[in-house]
Image (tube, rainbow, N blue to C red; front, side):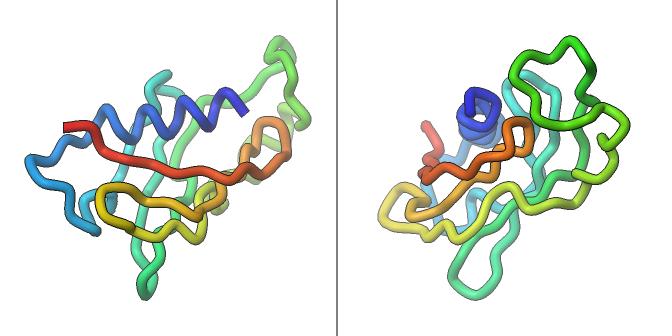
Length: 112
């Protein structure tokens, strides 16, 4: 859970816009921990994100639910889905925490 909350903070901190527009979130984002890259894209009126790159998990990672030998199976997996732009934030979405195998409701905004 912490990883993907940090992901959202990373999304916010790496792309600043003078004025928040619906498509301001579209693009490639690096997490604040610099251990993953997420590509955010728009499909109809909703925003989604897929995992482009991440630092492989290893045996020392606490709380992991995956076998390190399965690291590559997460590339191009959807990690953000169904986000809708509303005024100054993207909300009503869900984040898939691949690290712990859980989904969380979430929102994101860009700090100016």
